[in-house]
Image (cartoon, rainbow, N blue to C red; front, side, top):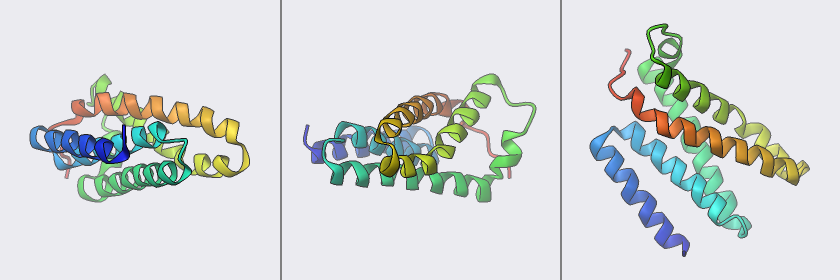
Length: 140
C-alpha cells in the first residue's frame, strides 16, 4: 500500500473518532496511525523516521495538553478510577516514557531498537483500546 493511501485511511479513521469521541481521542488515533505507518514503511528510513517522529511528537504533545487543560496527573492519581481507566493510563505512560530511550537505541543498538519498538507498539495498542474508557472524564 502506498504511503498516500495509508495517510488517507489514517486521517479518515481519526476523523471518525473525533466525530464520535473527542479531539484528543482523534489526535491519539492519528498518532497511533502514524506509528503503524512507521512500522509498515520501516524499510524506507525516510518514511519510518518521519512517521515515528510524528507519532512521538503527537503523543508528547497530547500528554502536555492533557496536563495543562485537564490536570492529567491529578486525574491519574484519583483512586475512584476504574480498572480500564488505570490500564489506559499505565500503558500510555509506559509507552511515552520509552520514546527517548528508543531514539537513542536507533543509533546505538538496532536490535534493541526493534525489541523496545515492539514493547512500545504493544503498550500503545493497549492504551488506545482502553482510551475509550476515559471518555467523559474531564477534571478541571
